[in-house]
Structure formats: structure tokens, C-alpha cells
Length: 217
Length: 217
Picture 1 (cartoon, rainbow over the protein chains, first blue to last red):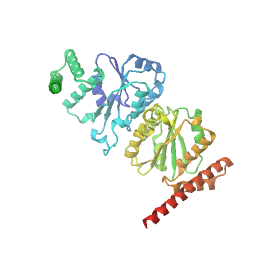
Picture 2: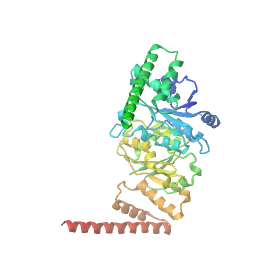
Picture 3: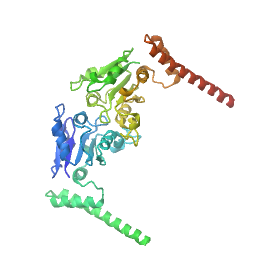
Picture 4: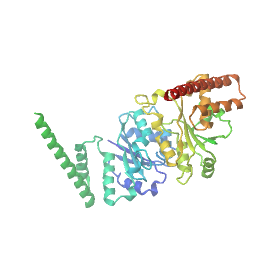
């Protein structure tokens, strides 16, 4: 499965969040694609990129509760109802300046990211794409180093994991990442920790299942 | 109350709907303001326009379930959290290529205009603006002449009526328009019809009220 990350940010080079995430995208079958601001778009190239990839990610900071203008411009120029995007996956990686609590009724924004992104959900529906759960990145700059690493791993999983949200898929992903890893010890430890947590949870679930099964027999 | 209509359409000159509506905006205290496409924005002029008007209307055709890029670009460039827009009114005039039935669960789009415009609602909330009910214009090209005229009157009311949704306000508006009218007979008849319907409804309501009051006494 090939992934295209379409990044919309008016000042990508100065964005700490985007640069941090970018370093995490040097993965097999993942293409980092920045949208230029106020530059003409080559529609043919963009449409070819869409055709070549199975998972399309729109990645952007929330600007006035939506994407920056460059992504809207890209949509208006590149998308056409004749495009065949069916069965591709559409994901959103959204960074915000406010904490998660702001995005709920009664919060500072008062609307959830799920509500604010209805136009993208309608887009996925229109093209018969599979809309992935949004990956929010709240106040990245305020996170601890450990949180940032965990966020990065989550992000990499979002980009590359087979989109089946099961424990088995998660563990398979962690295993393959471990095998491919040639990294410093802290990341390795973090991955191993996450992996054992998932395996414990799986063991618990299997035990519960066995008990339920016994009671049913 | 002064009204600013910010029109975002990639091809305004070729849009039958926009040209028809534009002819209806030659009203006192109403400013028609087209956003240029791919032109630099003079932020100072735009912010002054916002300051000078009490009712701000975003008018656009639905493009990929949102506004065209020119309006998003305008938002990104012009809006700043330091602007004082509190107690101003924010309205949306949205034209669509699909009928009203498309904009509901199970419909072709599957999302309502109220859902798709959450980012605008969040904007109004942020600036403590009064968010007006959306004025949708579904498939304007398919409407009969009579429906178009009714739509135009509705539109003019949206632009100029005091934003109190009461029968009295409606009737006051119709009366003042009648007094100002210097128009052909068909429009006049339409206005008079609408006015008498409203007055009948008001009389009915007053009678009902009187009956309820009697019963209470």
C-alpha cells in the first residue's frame, strides 16, 4: 500500500511540527508532498500522484477551523468528478494550537474536529473513498520528548499500517518496524514497551474470550 | 445597518446566478464586494470594510462542500484574532448545483449545509458574531421566473432586514420596500401577495392568542 502525504502549510520550513513529522516519513512507499503557496498547480502531475497511491493523507494545521487556502486551492484545481479514487483511503493529520479540550461543546472552539471536517468526509463519500479516523496533533510544541516520540510512532503507523484497526495488525506493524529498525535505544525501548502492552492486552482478551466460550458451552 | 457581501466565485462574470443576484443588490447600505482570484489582497482595505459594516455575508457556490479557495485565502490573509467583529452578523448565501434533497443523510451528498458549514459557525463563535440562518439557493438555473423573483426578494430581505425573525419585522420590511418601489407590476403584485399572506397569518395568530387569553382568564 502506497501513501501520499499532501502537506498544506503556509510556512512549512518554519514549522517545528511539520519538520519533526517530515523526518518520520522516510519510510518505504511513503511520499511527502508539500503544496507550494501561490504557485500554479500542474494538474496532470497531481492527478498522477493520486492514481499511483492508495492512501491519501491531507496534513495541515487548522486555520480558521479548516485547512489553509493552499489545500482548498489544490482541491478546486485538481479534483474532478471524473477521477477514480474509489476504495482509496483518505486520512487527515491535523495539528492544532489549542488543546483537545477546546474541540468540544462548551470548549473554546465549541466544535469537534469530526464536525469541522465534514467537507472532507463528504469528499470521501463522493469518491467512494474509505475515510480514516482523523489523527489529531494537539499543541505539539508543548509535548515532552517522550510524548513526541510516541506521537511520531502513531503517525508512522497511520501512514503505513494496513488500515485494519485490530490488535493483530498493530502488533504486526510493530514487529515489522522492529525488524527494520536501525535506530537509537530510546525509540527501540519505546517500541518494545508499546509492543508488550499490546501483547498483554491481547492475552487478556483471549483469556476473557476463552472464559465466555466456556460459559456458553 | 450596513451590509457587506463578500462574493467568492472563480468565474463571477460567467455565473448566471451571481449576476442575477448582483442586480438585486443595488440597495441602500449594501456593498457588493467580489474577491479577485489569484490577486494579492490589501489587508488594510478589507479590514476597514469589515469595520464599516454590521452584517457580513459570505456568498459563494459550494465547491467541494466548502467555499471556493478565494474565500479561504481571504480568511487566512485578512482575519486576525485581534479584529473586533463582536455583535456583527455573519450570513452565508450558498448556491448549489444539487437539489435540497441531496443535503441530508441518505441523500447524494449525505451532509446538510448546516453540517458542512461548521467552520463558518466556529468562526462566528470565535469573534462573538451573530450567525444568521444560512440562505441556500438550490439549482437556481432550474427555477421558474416566479421562483427566481421570490428568491430575489428573500435574498434582499436577508441583506437588509433587521435580523429579528418576526412577522412584524417581515411586514415592516415589505412595507418599506413597497414604498421605495418603482418597479414593474409583476414584482409589485408578488410583494403585495406576500404581504397579504403575512397579514392574514398575523391576524390568525392574534385571534388564537386572544382565544388562549380568554381561556386563561
